[in-house]
Amino acid sequence: MTKAPLALFFISAAGAAWAADAPQYNDASQSVYLQYYPSSKAPAGVAHTPGLRINFPGGDARPIEMDTGSTGIVISADSIPNFSQLSGTPGRLTYNSSGRIMIGLWVTTPVTVSGSNGQHFTTAPIPVLAVTQIACQDNARHCTPEDNPRGVAMMGVGFAREGSEQKQSSPDTNPLLNPATPDNFHKGYVVTRNGVHVGLNAAVSRGGFSYAKLQPDPHIPGEWQAAPVCIVVNGDQKRCGTALVDTGVNEMFITLPNYPSSALPDDASLTFTFTPAVSYTLSGSDSPLAPEKIILNTTRQTPFVNTGVNFLNGFDVLYDAQNGYFGYRAVK
Image 1 (spheres, rainbow, N blue to C red):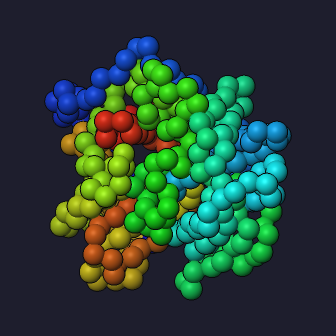
Image 2: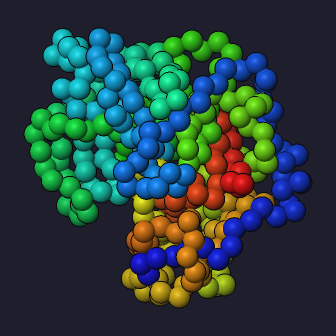
């Protein structure tokens, strides 16, 4: 199955009951909106891997992609001013979707992230992975080994990624959760197809979010386990597992344990349910939510879907890192 267009997406009447369990946010909590920079690969108003700008103390602002499928800033070492004078600890982060292994040093520094609307967000000193080498997994899809690479610039803002070859990517490396001034800051964000709201308050969270309650990670303080999802193929049995809304990829990655084929048929109908109020179905007609292609895994034992960035053409998503909620709001 190379394309899976959308037949239907909706928020049902169940949303009213589900909303009773919604978290409440303080009007006074600080929040900043960072509008993405335009993409040469997507028309205006269409979801694409978000582009922002980042700068380190003493350096100029440079482009960086915002990735909800990883955690932590990963950038070429030569992009960090005075890198040779900074102390660090060895580190690595693997991007499973491509098979690229980023190797370097975790150095601690504040960063400032800015949007095309002139707004900016400055962090407390956080660990940043300064990349000095790129290696490749044996089964890498898009990877070329390289020493002293230039042009690496990815800002991972996701959660629950430690079990996906990112053991060092804990919440303290997430730039959007570690503000320079933490007073009146509710840790979390709202990701839309046009920009990201950093910090949660009543204004940015209004408008019909339906929430899934996350479970705490038993081993990592301040971390939450992945959001739930149930998957149905062609009206068959329901497979329930975890979901990832990943702004870093255009494909969909789906795990269906023991599925009888190595690929989905072209006419497959896929229904994903994220909360009792939010689901959508991919079937046989064009849709803005359709991924470029679907990559199926049948050997892992837990059902899973990485929706890819096109999910943002239909929904905004909210991550509450303080209280452990993940929310979905239909785009109007």
